Image 1 (tube, helix red, strand yellow):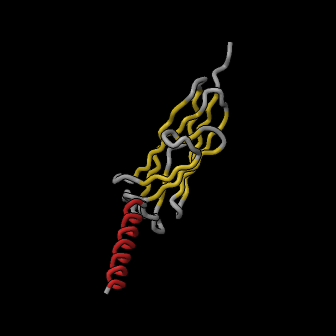
Image 2 (spheres, helix red, strand yellow):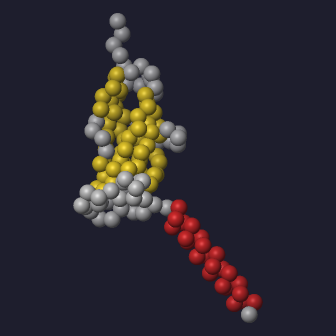
Image 3 (spheres, one colour):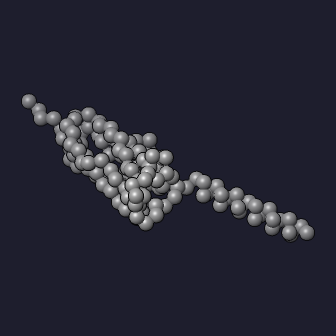
Length: 135
């Protein structure tokens, strides 16, 4: 009887752990899902620059997808605000948007590439930062 009680408690605890992991993780995008990001842009600035970039995830019919995992990577210079890192994994909201902030240091001049992936599809945007001409 004691062994049966312990086994039942272990099954309940295991089920709660699986439920917690399921609720805390986003969902993988199904085949046919699409991800889009803004067009490339060029800016001129001598100070730090902050951008917020929206990746939009839709199904094959163009309907926004909620709670989809989106992985962001930044290449070369800069980092994701609030994460102080060059990689972050976020979930889409009810409008299918995953928003990430990017900081590019003031002294940098050149291209910064931001990639986003949902596993079944990828998107990329590029920010070209130029320093102002000196007189």
